[in-house]
Length: 392
Image 1 (cartoon, rainbow, N blue to C red):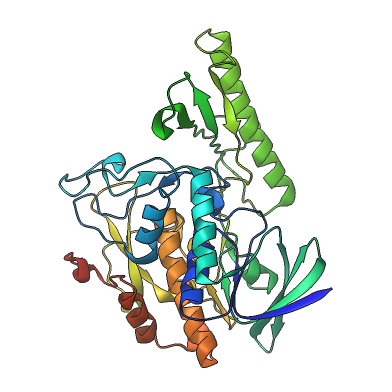
Image 2: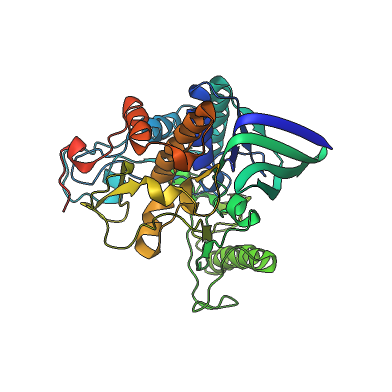
């Protein structure tokens, strides 16, 4: 019912997709961002996971820069929160590292502003439905929105869907993972004066029985499982409220939900079949094709180089992945799925897509050195030694 064409098409408007679109547009490419909701930010905003995890190693050394840092600071532009003093402490707890707690709604309007200022054409409320491959190259994607079903063509594409939907619809054998039940909500508690950290609190609950099979978990790529996951999470939260009310500690007037996530809070679903899969124990490892550095948010003193090869699918040209659908497994996936690394790989993907589109090539045909040079010029250190750390 409609057809459009762009230089770069970014599918998925989470942090990775937003970063990719901004990076591409800033390099002068006609860029589209396709997002199934009406919010940018993905799990960080629509999913209410409102902690921008650390950009430092926990020992006073910043390791992630570029758009990842730009967006961390921007998350506070229209809302509360502050960066802690993180430079002096060693083996710091997460709360004392270079990270912030932000208002999801505030971050959404900031991301809108960044995208529009960069010249990105945003397609909200637009669902990705199919990938069209011609001669081994991704040529276009099919979408549906209020205008009907349409086809969006591009010289290069970024899969930032979080679920590797573009790669999956193109027929690639993507890798799936399992998820335990989790639920975050924003709630009003105790009638405290407005402060994000006090009156707006996050509730994170993992499976402890009930209707969720902890051994099997859920993949997040089955329609009925997604519905069950959402309903089970809401039920866990509802039971928490009932218990608090029954114990007399709280009532519906001083403890209640302000808003619930508008997307399922899956951590890992699918990732692309890539040239290289980042593995457990590869922190501190040197990769010749690294595109930047990411800290482990769970523990101080662990830093990862992120290889370009983990972002490039095998068996399909004109596509690069960003965010949690880049290739990583187990513990490494815990590092690549979160906000700072999503922003980093998003910037790298958007930069590479822009280089590919402007040069009439596929991302897998690019010189890694050209991508690294562009990332460095944008303020991103590439290897551990560039921030004073040493590979092991």
